[in-house]
Image (cartoon, rainbow, N blue to C red; front, top):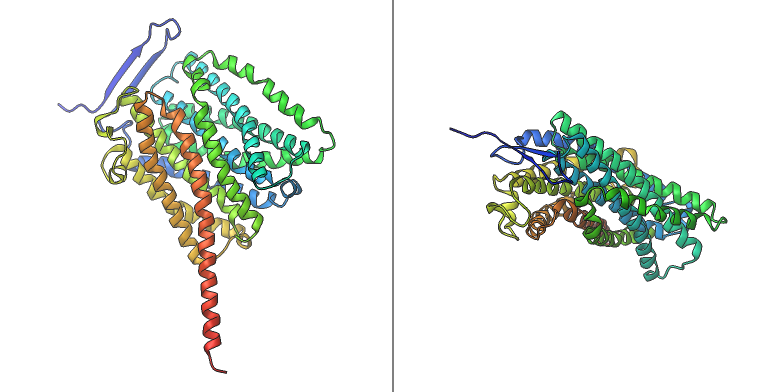
Length: 461
């Protein structure tokens, strides 16, 4: 007799969880009975949509960098990367939590579903408000390190713009995540495969557009010195309300106690990527840096978030916190085992790598068609760019495997602790490698030009 499917149903008698049932359905072939083709089809379309959204965000970035507020308040360029990264950290972490809840049956009971969604959204609003304020402080600190002058108007504009953007982007994308996860569950699609890319398809564009519009508004009304500080105080004053809503779900409330370190560290890591972006854009040497940065950072972050969410769901369904399955006992696995085995997470890593190069070629071609004058047409740069994308994602996918195992071994939830670190590191790797691509292409161009001049000089008159 061959067992093809196992269904388990749990009912809790605890007073706080009475009436809640959790039904798991799984097959012996993986977390969900999905084939490689099914996963590839489910992932490809959202990744393509998210890449197009990031491409539009890059075009927006290429435009707004010349606006008066970005020219005068240069710290806004430093703020772009951590703020966009913050949006990604919060929404991808939320999507991963909700996907795990849906795959383990917690979203099937209407009462539990309302409690899970409202408490998750409230926690995200608290995190967005606080970390939005901290992101502005880090941008100002990095500006001081670059010997930028500070005044009260600039500080208040930066803080108000950051908090406003973080708050409304987190709210809109959080609501979108809830509908996507519930809809995926209803139509039998694995939300781990589609939730984070769909959020990212609008997230970067929304965050950049909001930041540009809001900062320009405060810049135009800079004579009203009280306006920006009042906005900051208003949003911070709403924080206790979100905490009260989050308290209705004790497991989610734990995130407000132990979930700050990953978000803050990820924001700090992304800030150094923002510093690289600011330095390269201000020099005006690298044509296309502003357009391509959201794409390389966003695609890498999306792919590693999908993989992290899938591994986390695998562990939630096949193990208990603190106990690793037999095939995942090693904390630092061989890279070959991460990408070259028949294990379900290794298969998904190969599928994501397979989609990477074609996706970036499509995005690069569309960007070149739309903004050809803003992007270099060097073939050597394209080779360097694709190689950088591949190196970035390979590193991130391997670190995802290692980090999820370490976090799970410590009885912590990977949905809350892994994605921020990995997306923050993805922003730093993406920006740094992209700047290196421009530098190497420039170096090759200079050598070719010198070789041409020397050959010309050697020709007898």
